[in-house]
Length: 248
Ligand SMILES: [Zn+2]
Ligand SMILES: [Zn+2]
Image (cartoon, rainbow, N blue to C red; front, side, top):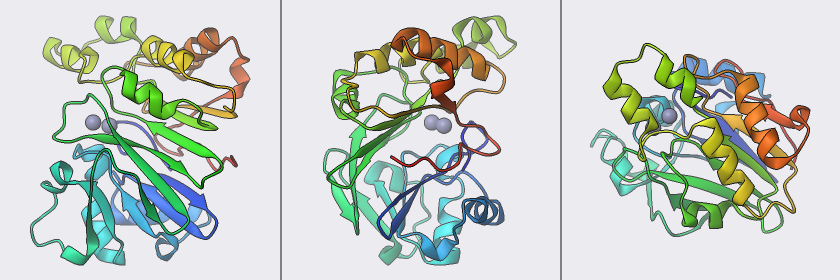
């Protein structure tokens, strides 16, 4: 429903179950984005959260409270929820243990990122798997193991290294973004996807693109070059619209 440093939210639907992953938008904005996707807040069985950065957690508490929706998050991330958040709406998760919310199996996995206990997720129904990985400074063997064999992937392509270093961000911020606990650049993302077992891969979406330090065409060409596929096959999630429904 939207992806980038201005806010992130994604909906996964399987059978009668829908989960929202992250919510970096205000209540009214999230409701409007859900409506665009043909959904209302009462359609959601829960919100799974990756980490505490505002573009992911910023809208979670208000939305959870407003619509009485459960939030699934690591204990490290849960520290950023107000202690007054109703306990029955908070479901702590283990970063290495899969769990089920109705029809959806959710596999969290830890990622290198400058947050307290950040995870990303693979969603599945026992048949097909969707891997979503934004906000990681580098790939790891474990990340690649989790993403291998997925039928659909949403992968961070945060920046182009030349645009980042040539741009006007303060040097400390550039170092943070490019660091091993920052964000994936286009080429590193492409190399990571190339390393995966991809025999079943049907959808690939570039996400969390920086508006300052990246261009959709650069992310797409890096991924297409690494995979040897048509550029038109690769989707790009935008800040304002996300990428619309895909059937896996
Ligand atoms: Zn982010
Ligand atoms: Zn982050």
